[in-house]
Image (tube, rainbow, N blue to C red):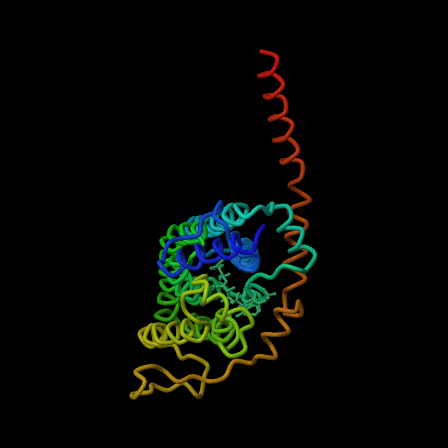
Amino acid sequence: MSESNQEHLQATFDARVAAESRIEPRDWMPDDFRKSVLRQMSQHAHSEVIGMQPEGNWITRAPTLHRKTILMAKVQDEAGHGLYLYSAAETLGTSRDDMIAALHAGKAKYASIFNYPSLTWADIGAIGWLVDGAAIVNQVSLQRTSYGPYARAMVRICKEESFHQRQGYQIMMVLARGSEEQKAMAQDALNRWWWPSLMMFGPHDAESAHSAKSMQWKLKRESNDTLRQRFVDQTIPQAELIGLTVPDPDLKWNEERGAYDFGEIDWEEFMQVISGNGPCNKQRLDHHIAAKENGQWVRDAMAAYEEKRRARREAA
Ligand code: BYC
């Protein structure tokens, strides 16, 4: 490609981003933009699918039939989110099999939070309230991301996440108004999920390797720290309303900023978890690998059926 042609393509791309137009799969895009969108969408898709495990763990133990049906629907929604996102990522020419192979090889990441165990029923409340709550804050912003298929996937995902967040908060509300034991269980879940939820937004802006470029491309619309602050500000009043306390001695309303000041995340723990050394990393990956292997016969049967139909069509 001539240099002037390359410059023209780059200028067209830059102008589209500046004008808030979406970049679509067939549009020319710089290689590093393509790689970054793919990296983020793959990370996001894997998060949705691995994220089914901590909650799936409680489907058989949900306290009532009603709770069980809600939880099953919620976990199924997460699978659907993964599928929208894998499909969106495939528009950039990478197959789902390749993305999953990278996950199994430990090369592709997924959200750190799903490497923590879900120990009690209250954890299911805390995951819906805090984890889906944090995910919505991030994803509302991503509805305006510059890559078209990613932005469109986010619109539908956000609608469903909103229901997920409420179902989680409702579980916490019921427990917090219950017996002393139930209230203690809710508080314990908040204690264990609070800091990992704040880690979901990634490193501080100054430490974030991809943020500057991603913000320039409008792939990311708001920074990690801005979104984390928004999550804290919206969640503290919700905790107060149900009489639970966030486990942060440095948490304080800052009148001047009109926002909460809060303590420092344990970044060493974060780094350990995203490097594969969290409490459940191995368990989560082993489970995913086993599920893929155990489901191979279904994929083989579907492929054989499709092949038979094709042969019949050709013979007709
Ligand atoms: N966990 O430069 P940075 C759900 C990595 S599921 C793991 O700031 P970036 C749900 C980052 O990937 C939805 N890794 O990166 C499902 C990068 O490493 P690589 C969850 C993290 O991309 C079931 C490095 O650290 N939401 O809702 O600009 C049940 C440097 O970071 C994390 C998503 O997946 C982390 N927390 O920004 C319930 C959101 N943070 O790739 C609920 C989609 C950072 O260079 N992702 N890293 O090896 C994003 O929005 C962005 O990728 C991030 C990071 C904000 C996470």
